[in-house]
Length: 81
Length: 516
Image (cartoon, rainbow over all chains, first blue to last red; front, side, top):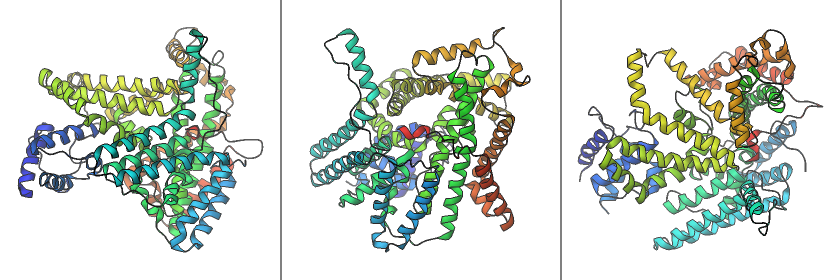
């Protein structure tokens, strides 16, 4: 899986979770950029990402990831395990 | 034991002496001098023998983290050890800081089953800052288990993490990873020293000029509610949040300023909370280090637990997406509020801080589509200043009601206070003329005091607006010319010296959050 593919699928996940078809993601996208991305939605998002990529994101990563770029890196790392 | 509150002259002298010792120490040993300074501070500010409890906590997390790492291959062993370390730390905290729970519970059982002994308090004093360092200890253990922190193999370095002196008084609660720079050496920096001093001065202003003054008013009203009724109750209701804010955030300013002088950045605890549009936003900006701690170590693990996910996805499938979200929100908020309420050490906080907000947030979330439709109907412009101001005031009022539980001696007294508040508008009790007939001055504050409060509140708002724009109000001041800068700081210093409530015959009250 390439990084581009990860971003493509991630964009779909984000659009479904936040009910917003206009969301465009980049490496530097953070919760500041998406209105509804608060601490509750963060968990819903993580769970949706886990389902989409059939991975398990460790708790430590859940609390420390800073932007979508980091999220993509974690997905790549976890799905190659 | 010498009295060492952080608003005393003794504390300022201590900080200056500490920074002198710290900066003349060779870089490699600076953390050792910091540890030495912290232990000396501890012995000056608390019962020296109680330091043993911090040593015990350090021992628990030190060995558990190393042992868990050694057995990281076996998830089960590492997990059990981590849980054991958390439970042990929480138990020590519970014995001391949670004593109100078990003392009340035992007397409750004793009244029904006389054979059950009514327990009194412990014969020992609690360690200073137990509520704060216990959170840090638990956070460190969990971080090591999650692999986000590397276990510290130097016991004394870990001990410094828990006992670092500024934060023992009123927090903030630090994450281990973010406090790692504490072990590095650094050179003296005059600019940093000035910045730290400025922040300390601002903290003194908040505590000694504003908070101590409002405290006189609120204490007079709360101390004699039979004669201070009607509008007085409303005054106490609306002034107390300001008192608590200037008290707590003032102390945190002093703590963060002290750490800044030593070149160490501690986490912020407040981010203009009174500008918040909703209660949810408010709690993300008030006592942030506790909120973040609860979010990382309570809410996320609970929400990500298998059972929670099963439940919320079950509800989502059956009743739709919104209902599913409401369930996970409910579970997350409930646990977070319960634990942070519990942390405050008395069941009235669980009800006041916790359950009240739990209900407010769930209701708000549940009714938000309805409220939105109502707003459309009424033609409310949601991005207009007036609507935002209305929401800010609403958030403030909800907060002031929750603080009734903070002020009252128990739940029933709190409910009585709320009832009296609503009764205060009935004829015979309603007494708005106290503002005009001079009776306002019968609660311990003079005319001058009221003027100082108003002017200080304007200064607070000004500083908050500057902070919103420039990160810190100090950043804006630093952009100004030298003469203006000096005027600002000298004026603030004068205000603190002349109008601060201190000096012979006056003992500044303890910080409200010092007891935790």
